[in-house]
Amino acid sequence: MDLQWSSAMQQVYFKQVVLPVMNDARTDWESESRLGFPFKVIRDEVIRKGLCDFDVGHSHPTYGSVTPSEKALLYCFCSMRAHFFEALSAFRHFHTVIDGLLARNGDKIFLDLGCGPGTAALAFAEQFGPVEMGYVGIDCAKSMLDKAGEMLAAAKLQKLVAMSSPFIGSQTFDIAGRMATGFSKATSVVINASYLFASHSLDISKICDVVLSLKNCTDVQQLIFVYINSPNTLAGKKYETFKRRMHGQFTGDDQPWASITFRKKIAGPDVGTSTYVRQLLVFKE
Image (cartoon, rainbow, N blue to C red):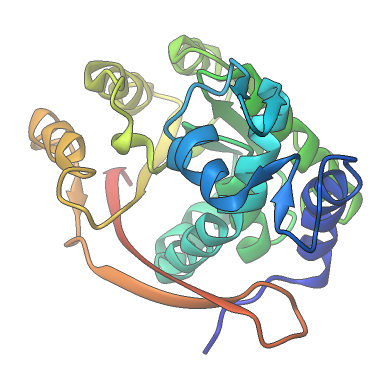
C-alpha cells in the first residue's frame, strides 16, 4: 500500500515549502525551474543531494544566486517527501518499542541528530500524534534549524504537534551533555539519526559521547536509537564504526532494507519510490 500523509501534514508542506517556491518570481513552473534553477542543477550542484554546506549561499553564472535559507527551502522541495516517508515507514516498523516508551510516565524527548528541516520529527508526530514531548534538533547549519523551527511551529497550528511541546535547536552536540545533567525527573529519549552517518565531516566520537551521556544519566529510564540511511555500503560505513565502538552497550535487530512507495499528494496518481536501511538500537530499557 502506498504511504501518504495526512491532510494536516500536506497543509504544513504546502504552506511552508510549495507556496514559497511557487510564489517566487524566479520560479517558472512550466519549464520546471525553481528559484531560477533547473531541478538537476538544484539536486547535483546547489544542495548536492543534501551534502552541501547549508550556511553559505550558491551562485551560478547562468541561473543566478540563492541564499542559505533558500538552499534549505530547495532541499525541502526536492528531498523532504522521500525522507519523510522513509522516517514514517521506520517509525511504523518500530512502533511496538516506541509505543512502550511513550506510555511510560515522565518526560519524553525526541533528539534528532542532523535534524535538517525537522523531517523526522514531523514524521514522528504524523505516526504517534500530538504527544507532549520536547523536540531537540542538532544541525550544524543555522538555516536548517531555522526551517525546522518554522515547520514544527506550522505543525502545531495543524495540531500535529502538541502546543506545549518546545523545539530547541543547536548547532553543536554539546547540548546533549547539558540535557543529561539537567533532567529533574524520569525521562525517556528517542534518538533519531536519519542520513547523519552519510556526512563526510561527521565525528563519530561525538555521537558516542551523546549516547553514553544519556545512557549513564540516572534520570533517563529508556533510551532508543533509530537509524535511517541509504543502502549504499559507503553511506553506512561510519555507522558500522559507531556500533563497533559502542559494542556491548545496546541490543538491536538486523538492518533490513525497506522499499516504499508514497503518494506525493493525498489525491492524485503521482507516486515516488525509495529504498533505505533502518535499524533500532536499544541502549536502555
